[in-house]
Amino acid sequence: MKKKNKIEKMLEIPEEVYSNVPKVTVTGFNELILENYKGIIEYEEFFASISTYIGVININGYNLNLEKMTNDDIKITGKIESIEIDRVEE
Image 1: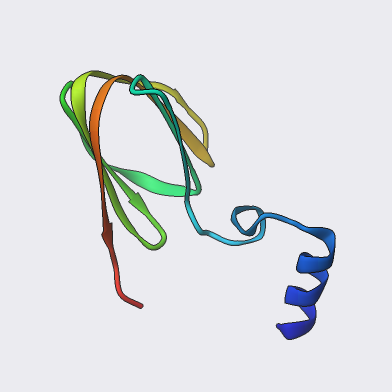
Image 2: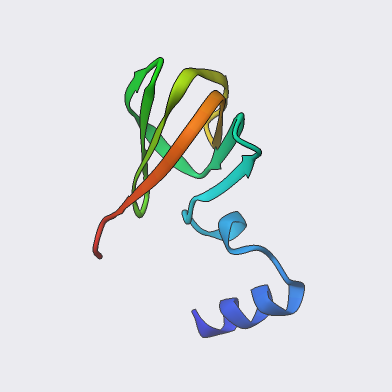
């Protein structure tokens, strides 16, 4: 495993590419992209709860839409008011 880490560091590969660590990208207050998610726990127009490999990410807001979903990432649009991360201890 140490050799793998050295190679990844030398090549400057982002951790989310070679692991299950989620990456959250927020653009303003209107768009959120979550990479490396496991599944959707709950979704409503004002709340979304998404499971990741290290915990649960809760998004609160208004007019939330699951605009684009693939097996690897999900795009949520709307008026995002808050993001909460509930970490699962390993």
